[in-house]
Amino acid sequence: AKQQGRNTYQWFASDLNVEANERVELRNDLQRALEQEQLEVFYQPMVESRTGKIRGSEALIRWHHPVRGLMSPIQFIPLAEDTGQIIELGRWVLQQACRDAVRLLGLGYRDHRISVNVSPVQLRQAGFVDLVTETLRQTGLAPELLDLEIVESAILYDTEQVVDRLRKLRELGVGIAIDDFGTGFSSLSYLKIMPVTKIKIDRAFIKDVISNRSDAAITQGILSMAHHLSLDVVAEGVETNAHAAFLRKNNCQLLQGYLFARPMPFQNMLEFLTTQAVA
Ligand code: C2E
Ligand code: CA
Ligand code: CA
Ligand code: CA
Image (cartoon, rainbow, N blue to C red):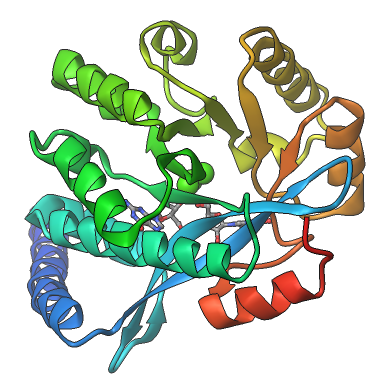
């Protein structure tokens, strides 16, 4: 048993080593990625459920890794948050997304909103409001066309400062969307202190909304609450016509998911938009 225990320990230790080396390597690679323009912002449209019109899109980062190929943000965002690289990365995404939004405006998409994901680590920076203000000024994007997507856990630490920053952003005219709504804890009490304009229902509830009675009830509950609070709602992970029909019937204003489009490069997004009538 002792021998076995030691083997187990060795396995575990070498696993940890592999993981640590891998993280060091990825961290160095990510530094290079920021310098060598290996990052790209993809966009996924948000569709108005009643009309089918595209009302906005979410900016989602991608990394064209020279060896690993196209990398999903779930493979490197948590690491970037640990190393602090998320600050530079987040600044870059915000700027790129605002620039692209201005290009859309110039092409006549006058009320296309852009959603940008903001990490809790970014929100804990004292300079975050200045960064947003400066980026809007530099790019010339109207604050009313920008939504910042934040997760509920963003106000777990430094609550007062973070909430204060969110208020200042709201005063600028920027929208605040709660991402992955319903998956964090105490969603409802957070809603009272966060200056929120939009809720994004997590795809965990949408996935089985047709077959699972509690998912359906939770989704309907979130929608009803959001309407009473005059908040906009987006359903994430809309993959089937049945999902869309259920959400439309329950007055979910905006839909996002593979049913309409996967996240895509800006150029493809432009082509996708031209297949739609300009709103
Ligand atoms: P998220 O903010 O919840 O973004 C939605 C994710 O769901 C995206 O994954 C999107 O591609 C995926 N998705 C959209 N529609 C569907 C669908 O119908 N079915 C399924 N199964 N998935 C769908 P993605 O692009 O891999 O991003 C993963 C997460 O990485 C994001 O989750 C977000 O938390 C984070 N992330 C992405 N870009 C950024 C960024 O620029 N900054 C920060 N801080 N985080 C980012
Ligand atoms: Ca998001
Ligand atoms: Ca989400
Ligand atoms: Ca998510």
